Length: 71
Image (cartoon, rainbow, N blue to C red; front, side):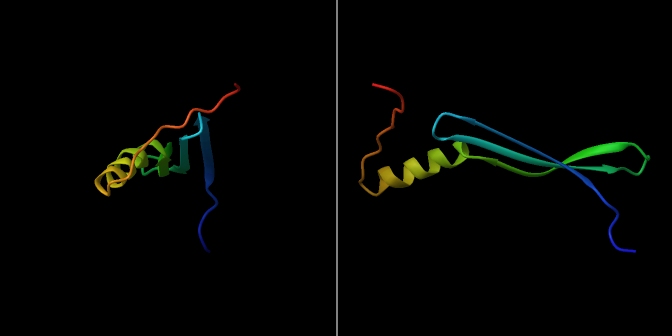
């Protein structure tokens, strides 16, 4: 009855203030009976930067990168 239990693996790392990558995998038994990992979700913050920058520049605004660190 119901759905069989599944194993889920989550992975996430960050690089700098604007780089975030998140992935979610689900591990299930395939048709052959072997375990298979399927990527269920993926998000990369860098993929949003170029379209966002283009929209800002097309609207007449200025795009300036930000540097984080100790002075």
